[in-house]
Amino acid sequence: MQKHKIDLLIFDLDGTLIESKWDIATAVNLTLGDLGLPLRPQEEIFSFVGDGIKRLLRLAVGEENQARYEEALRIFRGHYLAHCLDRTHFYPGVEPVLKHFARKLKAVATNKSLEYTKKILEGLGSHHFAYVVGGDNGYGLKPEPGMFLKILGELKVGKERAVLIGDSTNDITGGHNAGIRVCAVGYGMGNREKMAACNPDWFIEKPEDLIELFV
Image 1: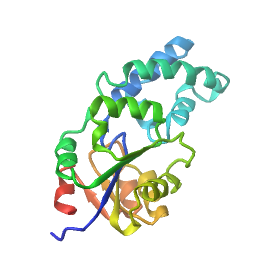
Image 2 (image 1 turned 30 degrees about the horizontal axis):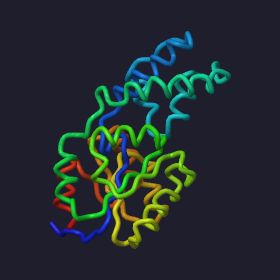
Image 3 (image 1 turned 90 degrees about the vertical axis):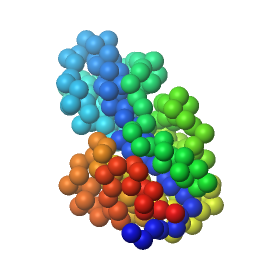
């Protein structure tokens, strides 16, 4: 297999680097419970993940309870900060990949708020990453290209020497909008058919496959 030369790997967070859905679901249901709203099945909450916490909570409180959204957002913050490392971990294979590419620049681009992102990465291994951009940094949410362009500019890497690794259509479309190549992952939370329809440059089944793709 031909290996592709790159200088920078940009990773999505939830569903790509970390398995975080259990702690997100716990915080959502604790929030709904505090608000006196019906709890939701975990699988339903998992389906809400991917477009940032604000969108997640709007869906979780439900159409008829949007007036309580701001309150939900405030309550959720406390619960998620308390529980975001209870069961969240790097996917199997992620740490060996990060160590393999120790000499390459690595960054994180996530629609998740930076506050949560930093706490999780500090708990799991923030030293791996040269730069981190969250959904509330002011560069727009994926699939907008802003956070990718910010990373390229900060780390002074050309688009042709970077690759984005992610598990959602937002990642694939956002990467293409930024003019960088994209590797979709099949082990995360994303819908495989929808991702394939966005035409990622590569599609892998496990993190270790990156070692065979890039040099």
